[in-house]
Image 1 (cartoon, rainbow, N blue to C red):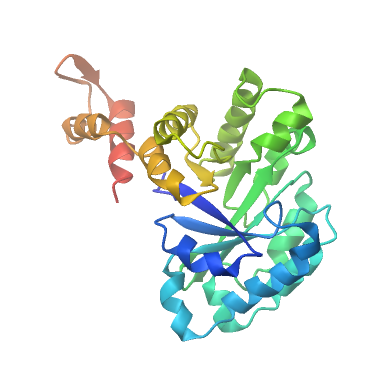
Image 2: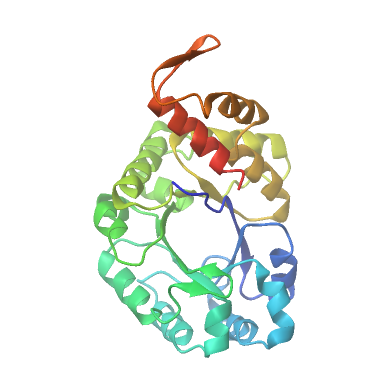
Length: 285
């Protein structure tokens, strides 16, 4: 398990005036959104804004130090193929500035695989790090096929679109049903060798403590990151998904205690406990 991005901040593609602010916000990733964050009538113009930003000259490269991911419309949308084709046709410089793609409403591995193949020249290492491909599960149909989806070559992380999924399942957002959905993505991510899944954003814009508590609960389920809809959510997300000072102090007392079962204070420590301690400390890198 390696350290992964904890926060993915959405910014509407139709608001290019907000791109730089989002990139400077401290988010681990910025997701320029061509889907729900953009009115249908504005999506063609919004795609043009994204392409222009990615194709900008060296002066903009300093601003793109934070990886930028583009969320396209879902595979069932008329805007899906044009966006994928446009991203596949980026100039070499623009490809180096594209940190990844996010595909929402994934229900079938085939169009996801086609999208990844189309942007395959972007894949690998870019100017901003490894290329990411996120697949959002937002329906019962997608959840039923999540093992196939997780196995698609080139996918790097699963995510949940909780609002759409809870509506499709006729379940409350805060319910055991949704916890089960998250647990399924955690399991399938582990089996596919992917980083842990990304949670839906909190819609709370007023209470950082509540956002942090929600993030910490999700981390306890095995979720390892979260989307954000506002920069004010970022500090709470980072705190909630990162290790607490108490966890860090505990981990430092555990590592380096040998390779057998030993007593450390009032706790018996063996290999799985050391592995957990090492994982906690790896998040500080």
